[in-house]
Length: 219
Image 1: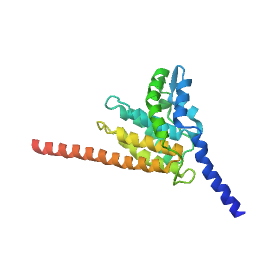
Image 2 (image 1 turned 30 degrees about the vertical axis):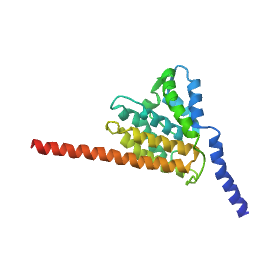
Image 3 (image 1 turned 60 degrees about the vertical axis):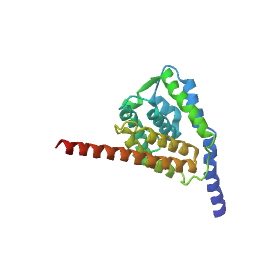
Image 4 (image 1 turned 90 degrees about the vertical axis):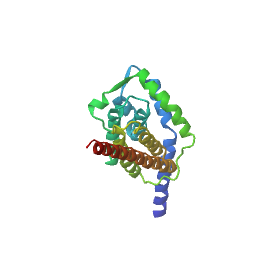
């Protein structure tokens, strides 16, 4: 009986990646873009994604922060990412967004501009991404990735010139790794995240040292 239960558990564990593989993020975003009519709000996107909204929202909000936008935009666009990552870290079952974020909307044209940039890059990544070597059991991966994404999203919101791209890229990789249950991509995304934090720390430390030297010179 115990052997049968173990086989059942193993079958359930192996089946999860296969179900996810049938509905990839590029297809989800493409469907959202095709169905978009009039304005589409962040809340609409979350509701359409349903129960599996965390991974796609990580990728989507990270992609917003990778776009070439005016300085300071990351302080606004990083906030939804911060909120989603925090909920993942605390084990929430469904993404909740405050009303002022959920009601923020894009026109169908603006949303398609974003997805036109995101989807081809996702497709290229998805050609080499697949369920493999996933080190987490059930929801534990969501929490671990949520903690990492939370740290990265804090650095994304800092007003550092060009300091948000690399952490946002790492967060997008982690979101895709979670969606596909790809342990190798999780390792790559984590490594990129550590490198991005090192860069941010170096920039902040260098700026602090330069400021201190300048003030000392003035004094």
